[in-house]
Image (tube, rainbow, N blue to C red):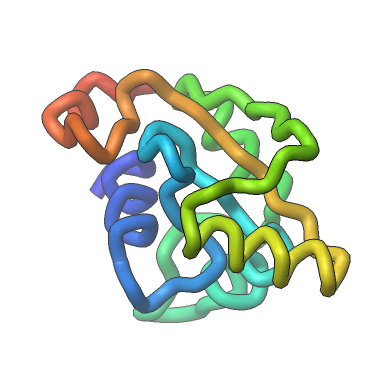
Length: 116
């Protein structure tokens, strides 16, 4: 699978708590510390991506046209995202939001356009 396809699968999976769709379903939200533990630290046949370093993973996002989105201080009204933001804020975790017009939950057919 390509990087965007792997990313899609883990965002859609209920097995991972560290990555989810934003309220708009157009951005990917990543709890950095948990993502490093839950996804990037996997080894062997359980490994998801070809890297175990967050910096390399973020470089891959950028290579595939994802851009980092800035979050304003307003909290989400979408309950799962709000709870994740609250948990992250209370534990001082960093949540990153990345956007790519071809990576949209409402339009999975666009995933094929998500290229380097």
